[in-house]
Figure (spheres, protein in one colour):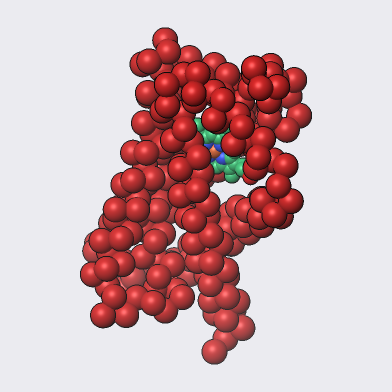
Length: 222
Ligand code: HEM
């Protein structure tokens, strides 16, 4: 096996593992964000208390660093693999994958870039604000992150940007899930049906679950 091929394989493996870890994070993040659907006073107390609990926990802090590293590794590996495939694609005229694969499978790079742009804004507006901004405090004395989230979705353009980014994320997950299953070798004929159904439902729940949050806030608060 050529050295180049071997390193591409290990890159794909690393991308699958970091991708699956990010999938796991999204479930936890969505579950935490569902507190935003509670009645206002309860949502504020519960969401701010939960954020405080997470930020003060040493174990969660350690997992956060793994999370940041996963985002960086996943993005860099994706870039390297895309560039390598593009270089290779020009050499084989018989490569007609475009004729049978889904559009989103062929555009993972573009979808990933949209998600990365989304994350830059997301980190700036929420993560940075929470860690380094001067936030108001709620009745319990906790940083009022709930207020920051509500204020952010007062702008319809921002809401639409989030919804669009969630659809990019959904299509990215739809392909990424099968791709990761294939790479780590669990796409066995016996489990194919299960992986397909699970991957599809997972992608739908994440997409519509996250997209519903800015829409709900915009239409109930503004
Ligand atoms: C409408 C949906 C979303 C809302 C309301 C939301 C809200 C938040 C808030 C308030 C924070 C700051 C809390 C903190 O740092 O402890 C945060 C952090 C974060 N969010 Fe989101 N989020 C949403 C969607 C997403 C999506 C779709 C992704 C990934 C594609 C994502 C990735 C992250 C990451 C990586 C962090 C940093 C977590 C950490 O520091 O441990 N979020 N989000």
